[in-house]
Image (cartoon, rainbow, N blue to C red; front, top):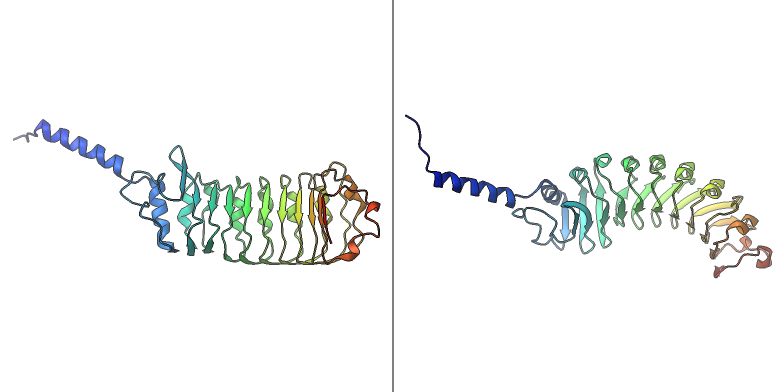
Length: 287
């Protein structure tokens, strides 16, 4: 004997299924919720991070474009824990902003699968910079200032030739400035101050045609600067203070028509007897 089903019941079941589909959280929202288990957050993530929603796009600190998470602004929170590998499932993520005090230990992150473009001030991160950053083919801005990284700058960063801004100041990096930096042909701002870099200032900085800001202050760099800045160099800011450098400054700085700011505090031998010898129009000179 066949089973008869009331058409009204079928209609109700169809409506129920549709409602469930609309109200169920999409995969990107589920990814964000899964990350919470790695984090100890103060103050706690607000109740807007709710599994009953269909999308995380209205959650506190979450920015979306066409229903995809592209940015996390968590600057009002202090984090400790690990950056869970699930973050690699956010394939459209371009920036993370956590200026307050993002105390994260970097775990194994599937970074090759998502297009991170900015990583801003993930404060109090420890250890070395993982090689996985070299897989971020869309990365344009990497700001890891004021953390606790140590060791050397990984050579894997040379693969990220999309970088225009690299800031590693106020860490504990050491060793010579790596030649791999010269492959970053689009780099405009390079901030390496307040570390433990040693050796000489490499000549390759003169070959980085788009470099505008170079901050090397508060390191242990030595000897004379032999860098040759070619005609048309875009360098506008150079900070060398609090090193153990010897002068004079290279006259090739004459080729830097945009040069505006020179900081050579605590490096008196870098300045010639008469600044006019360089014929540079500077808006500000610190020494």
